Image (tube, rainbow, N blue to C red; front, side):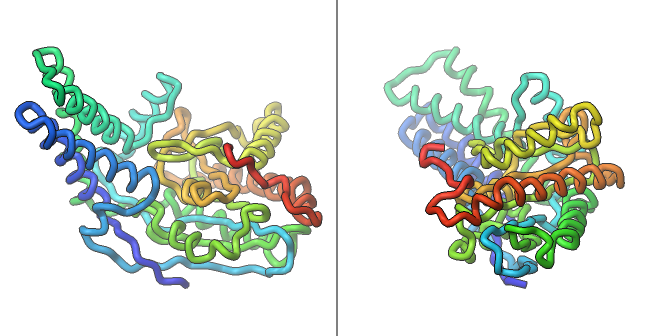
Length: 361
């Protein structure tokens, strides 16, 4: 175990930032410059915290000790396969409950764009900032006031919902993410001990994931010298206990970054080969939460997240053994193809491997 420090009070921190944006919106009518400054601070601090995974206001609201549980395998092969599953459960509350997740996923399915839990808050803050800027040269009028009122009301509602989350209890966590931890153990049992030709297998059970990927971020920072970008693949296992298999092509709560193209290509190939049989039902997913896979991609490592989702890509709370078996079968196929198709290239004595990405990707 490795002890880490996390700052878990994100609901209260985002509530304060939303309230700061509301105050800026109100003050912009009479003192435009002060309103702009407050609105800009709210946008920047929210983006740094949720988008860059850099704790900002949360640092002032208390820290907590947590642990990353790590199982190091052999260190003889040229490649590294890191299986990641967080073991902490999230908070409950109206905005993050099952019904809210289903409705948000259904609306995202309708507009053909996934919506993350934090996106409405952030874009409402951005809208308020824009309206505050428009008031700097003296613009006003009923129309501007009405338009500015809409995101301001959304932020007031956000404050109430975030405070509800802050005061609510912890979820049970059977699917998110006891299922991912169980799958990591099964895969480690199958592929550990030198079973792969080109990859050593290590396992990370990350603590503090619900504190905006705090555990995985701390692990990657501490061990960045051991995890080379040209030889490491991170496979994040998150909520694999119900629904059909999904693999990420992009991840991120505010700005989505691409999952590694070679890993995605392998997942696509498995999904295409499985089209007729329908064993896995796998398809692409844009994951709009600050996952451990997003933390790995933000650190520049090849990574993708494997999850199981309901019909419109929401995360059910229950656990289904058949879903776990589908997820395990898909991951087994993916790891075997990684070893066969990418592992040999990593083992070759060249400066770059197939995992190397262009600087502008």
